[in-house]
Image (cartoon, rainbow, N blue to C red):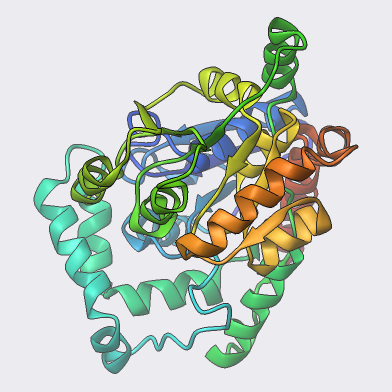
Amino acid sequence: MTPTDPERPLRVLFATRADLRTHPGGDTAQIVGTAAALRGLGVEVTVGGPDDLDPGGFDLVHLWHLERTHESILPFRRARRAGRPVALSPIYWPPGDAPRVIERGIRGGARWWSEDLKNVARLARAGRGARAGVLEALRAGWARARCELLVSSDVLLPNSEAEAEMLRGELALSGAASPPRIEVVVNAVDLEGASRVLAEAGGGAREGVVCVGHFDVRKNQRALIEAVRGTDLRLTLAGGARRNHGSYARRCRRAAPPNVEFTGPVAPLEALRLMRRAAVHACPSRFETPGLVNLEAGSMGCALVLPDCPPVREYFGDEGHYARSDPASLRSALRRALDAGPPAGLAGRIAERFTWPRAASQTLAAYRRVLANYNRRA
């Protein structure tokens, strides 16, 4: 390994999913926003798919997604072979709100066989820039690859203290002798885009409920549709279907009553405009990290209906209206949110605490600590 040269800018490779921009999601906003803010701090950031670039030309490799081994395990192993440190943003919360034991051996792979089947399906449709990563994940097995990422990265960068504690629990269960550093990096919003939309909207009236996000069984839009059935609430659902979730999106459309509108995929600024016009933004997910979309909706002045899980409560405290994932609970939370209106000061608190410059500063500090350790050992 080669120590970094203090006379030149830090060079970082963001190894991401191959379809980061063609199928944008919350991780796209997080990756693009972090990269831009790091460049503002003088860091040279290159964003590439899992098959694209040689990690040897960089000082550090930053990976995204603990669970999506087909996107992460190949650049992780290439970074290791090149003697480069690895940072991992897990973007993770387990469905049961408790640490999971995922063994790295054959039995572990058998227990999580459905994830390997997903990788078989991914391989069948993988295009240029993704096939080698899926093959590497299949050879390793999902459980083994996930354990390798969790235990052997140099630093984990969760978005909340709750996620950090969950990762510590899983590391303890894994029996890792030398677990990685864990440093929290906040999620953030595009303040420039938010200010632009607020300025162009003026003080117009708000009405109805909006939900922005990909259609996905975990995102639970079907329950939200049922929550507004038979009510006078107007619901706008904005977003396209994730891969493998097209049938779920079609079922949602077939089930929708007349007071539900579907916009299809929307650009980031248009999503903010929808939020600015809505009285409430609802996030009906079965489980969730803090969620960029929740921060964006809060910055736009929406009252918030939120999933009741620890990372979300850490960010929003008593400023959100929490619901379980069933229609009755969501309907009750919608009514409470409409009656209460947006919490005073939420938008200002988001603008102060959850910014890309702050996220980049925390990320860069974590890089420097990891690299200092590498340089001492070089």
